[in-house]
Amino acid sequence: MNKMGNILIENKKLVVPGEVIAEGMDFLPAVGVMRDGDKLVANKIGLVNIDNRLVKLIPLSGAYNPKVGDNVIGQVVNIGFNGWAIDFGFSNNAQLPLRDASRDFIDRNADLSQYYDFGDYMIAKISSVSKSNLVDLTMKGPGLMKLNKANGKIVDIASSKVPRVIGKQGSMISLLKRLTDCKIFVGQNGKVWIEGENVNKAIEAIKLIERKSHLSGLTEEIEKLLGGK
Image 1 (cartoon, rainbow, N blue to C red):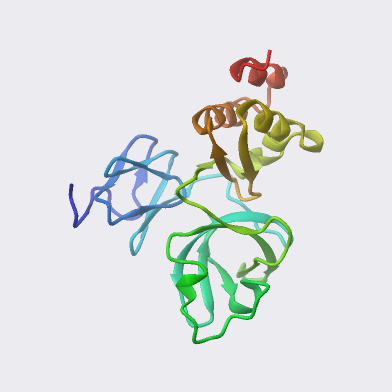
Image 2 (tube, helix red, strand yellow; image 1 turned 90 degrees about the vertical axis):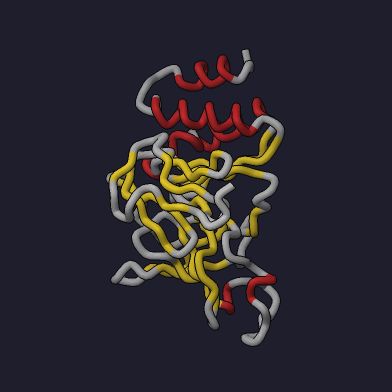
């Protein structure tokens, strides 16, 4: 195992799905990148972006446009004196300030990593978006939580496909949960959290929805794939 790590693709270079970007366990996969053993592999087309230990891809199209009230999935990429910087697949990292990180009071002198550590994933809500696209998040609200990295997986889809994955009145996401027996949360930013016994089957179904979102008969195809009929 390469403990020191090795970057194989230069920053800002274009990669396609399957390309190995880095080797070594001291690099962490973020948006558009997955781990395969000790390798970090691209799972979509995009531009390589290396931020300290985090390796992510910047998509070429279909970029997410953040809106106040959106629930998103993000990852802690920095811890400062006043809160956390969160990568949520946008051009700018979002900020999670101390006052919005918990229902409990957090002292400024506290060890903030005890609340959200580097690399942690979370479901958060966008509380504000400035004219210059600076985004603030909050963890105060129903369903907002830190996610257990050991128990689930993140899959990335185009944010424009989120409504199709959810379905009318939540019909498609309910079907996926029922037939895979998984907990599934779809962030408006196109990041999907999946936890359960049949995670890989759920990912296969979600990717199928993304590819064929414009076609009719998709519900029946998903049911067939997942053994619902």
